[in-house]
Image 1 (tube, helix red, strand yellow):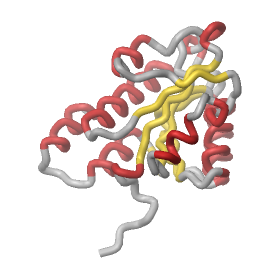
Image 2 (tube, helix red, strand yellow; image 1 turned 90 degrees about the vertical axis):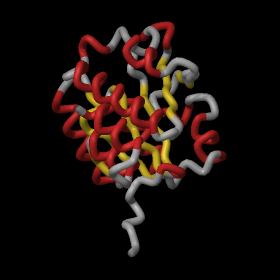
Image 3 (cartoon, one colour; image 1 turned 135 degrees about the vertical axis):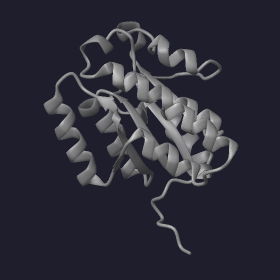
Image 4 (spheres, helix red, strand yellow; image 1 turned 120 degrees about the vertical axis):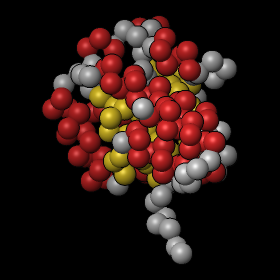
Length: 185
């Protein structure tokens, strides 16, 4: 049986967490939900042994990544950037290409600025983008909604945290299934 080519595959996938930094979080719409879902994704990706990357936009001004996220990312190194798009985050795009990671699962803030520009650049560089709608946000709900609509129209696959994890899992009845099931509860 043939599976749809857009279904996420572990060996082709990576999680990208964009600029979830302490100083901007308090003004982000539903930031607690975003942090909770990004944490679930990190735990799930670690359980499935899938690469995780994260960026920080001008950390001198916006501060470090949220402690909640950093607690899950011990041993990982942030890609620093001054550009809005992650295409300017050191050698991140080259790293993804070098490792043959073509399905990028995108989370972070803000939906209409750094996330949107990154998604557009990933698409322009022939990556499949899976935008996790319940793991991105903006200060204003209007900006969030319009950005999601625009990214969808440009070719991003818009999905949810739970959908991503179960799509990558593929099989039930495995130790990984039990771990992912605990994570999403």
